[in-house]
Amino acid sequence: MSPVISLSGSVSLQSAALVFCRAILKQRMIHTINHGPIRELRLNRPPVNALTGDLIAALREAVESAPKDGVRALVLSGTPGRFCAGLDVPVLMGLDRRAITSLWRELYALMKALACSPVPIAAAILGHAPAGGTVLPLFCDWRIMADGEFKIGLNEVQVGIPLPAVILAALRRQVGPRQAERLSTAGLLMSPAQALEIGLVDELVPTEHVVEHSIEWCKTMIALPAEAMTATRHEARADLIALFRRDLNAELKKVAASWWHPETQATLRAVVDRLKKR
Image (cartoon, rainbow, N blue to C red; front, top):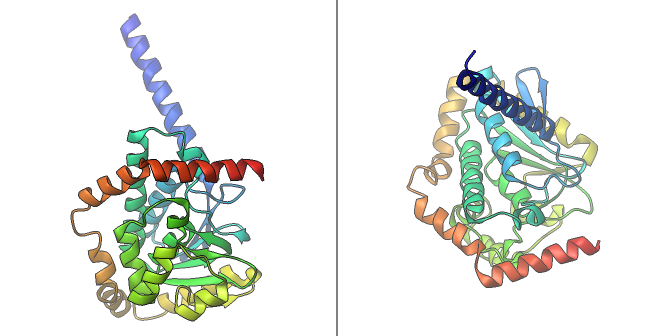
């Protein structure tokens, strides 16, 4: 066997091994649990399910592939007490411009996958859900949150990140223009009861029943005449879907560029310093 062929085979084996390792990593970050025709996608990136590029990509792929597997509804869950802490700022601060741009593109792709999913999705918000932890449920169909000493809200402004327009539009759709302005501009975090009062979440139940109630909600949806439910759901969500039917390249460039603004970087570094002291 010639050295060239041997080298090519070695590279192929290395590529295959890399793909396999990435697949295993994604499986570890997201636990897939089937409840009959309903699939639960459980975030599993301890300690707080903070979002990295790999986790975002894995979740997008899981959401997109589920209907192809015959899944009729999805539940997006996390760890009891910690649904999702948003972007993993300490990790992201070590990325270069190209990697940050790629991450934001992947996050937009995940939001699109949730918004445009052909099957209903219930967000089982099992605990704290700041920033990205609130973003994900915004693009789902129904939001059930744990009732307790938890916080939820889009606090991006408080950590120096301007709220992207597509997320603000989804928030406005959920809670109305006035509340969206109040919550986003000040970057407010609130209790589950306050979130329920303004319509940011749809139900509150004890933590141990959040996933169970989310599954039950899915069951009520898939028990309906499928064609009528699917067609009506598509029309009802047309405004949300339309957010991703337009050219978002300019918005993405603006969002990625804002990450590197001196004030944003200074605020994010202060956040990282505070986290290191905990």
